Length: 335
Ligand code: EPU
Image 1 (cartoon, protein in one colour):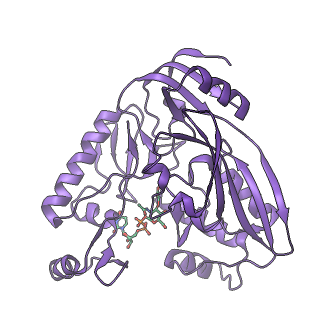
Image 2 (tube, helix red, strand yellow):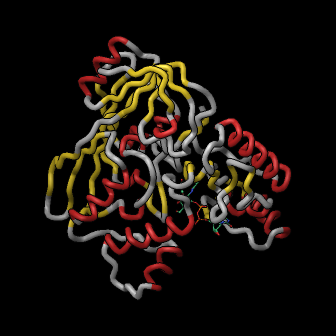
Image 3 (tube, protein in one colour):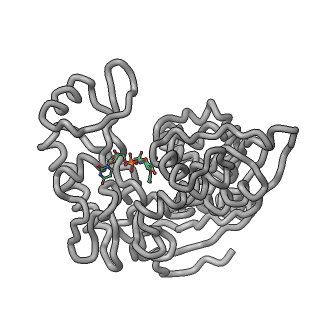
């Protein structure tokens, strides 16, 4: 295990923020991880670095989780069970599944990050959440070094949420995720308006999982910045859930406001819309700003600091509260 000293984390987070790691180690096997945990437990974990905003130098040992490999556990005529190590890139895994004709995660194409972090925030897009395909998650307990299995139910998945963000936060390192996917006959989810439009434009009436993946890639590319070109962390805020009473009140004042139903008493409203209404969409403040095509995404044009971006996020939260009496919750981890 090669522990490096004083390295910049700029290339290890999709926001492209440069902070210093006093000590840094890349881990590529479960064995090495368990050996490391015997000596050290005060760690700062980094995987795909796609859901964090770094605002300060990291004093703890930074552990880059780089466990690779995919194995097929069992197959039947219509399903396949796979286990994927945490350090595999999510989108490359999705593309591999499409090539193998394994269905279920095609709507989640082009989401940044690694497989090991997909359960933490239960990644979701275009009507699909990853929780619907996960069978179990394996993780090492930091204190004991023991390998533990969480069943799907034990993960306590919710909207952009799981047990790993709550009860057991900071206690485990996810080492692999197991999935159940479809083979041959797939359950396609094309109900999301943007996908329907994209397929319609291409005159595709009987789409394959590849067609859906291609459509999602085209939609995402048209709205969301590529982290390789402009630093970002996808949606910076969660879509807030508000009472139907407040929604009706807002609708009188802002007739174009939209909502997704949650229950009789509550609806979810698009944070991107709220932020756009307050005039932030496309606003640039030197090295950072709000993306011009999707107001839910904050961007680093090159050399912004994490503190700059965090201050902008707080200004947005304050403005949304004053304008709509809605609390916007930050979705990324602010460090
Ligand atoms: N909208 C605006 N202005 C904007 C952005 C959006 O008015 O600047 C409106 C749109 O017109 C639309 C609604 O808001 O009516 C929803 O927009 P969109 O379909 O882009 O989805 P979203 O709710 O803003 C969520 C996820 C995305 C995911 C998309 C597609 C969250 C926090 N975000 O965004 O996830 O890709 O749906 O399913 O739930 C991510 O988590 O990093 C992410 C990108």
